[in-house]
Amino acid sequence: MSEPGTAAALLTHLDVDVSTVARLLPDVDLHQIRVRHGPRWLVRRYAGIALPWGIHLRSGLDTSHVLPTLLHELVHMGQWQRIGLVRFSIRYLGDYVRGRLRRLGHQRAYLAIGAEAEARRATVILLAAVGGAKGSPGDQL
Ligand SMILES: [Zn+2]
Image (cartoon, rainbow, N blue to C red; front, top):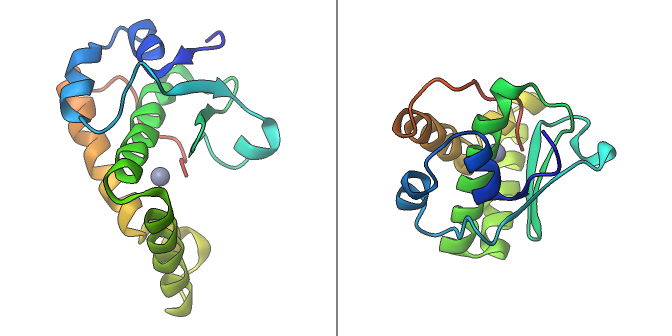
C-alpha cells in the first residue's frame, strides 16, 4: 500500500464500493478523511488509530487487515461526529477506567469499552455489506 490519501481513495484501491460504505456511515465524509501511515511510535501497538486529523494505519499492515482496520476507525469517526470528540473521549476513558476498576486487565477493559464494542459490531456489518470477508481486524484503537 502506497500512501493512501483519503479514506475514499483507499477504499477504491481496495476495490470496495465507496457509496456502500458512505450509506452505512452517513456521519463521515470519506472524501475528506485523511489516511496515512504511522508514525511508528503511534501504531507500534495498534494496527490503526483514528485521530481528529485523520486515520493512521501501521505501515506494512497485512493486506487482509487493512480494510477491517480502516472501517473500524471510520466507525469511531462517525461516533465522534454524533456525540462530539470531547464527550466521546470522556465516555471512552470512563469505560476503560471502570473496566480497570473492575479489575479487568488492559485488553479486557479495552474490549469492554462501549465505543469499541459498537465499532466491532459495525465493522462486521460493513464487511458483509461490501462483499464480505476481505480480511479480519487487527488490533485497533
Ligand atoms: Zn477502536
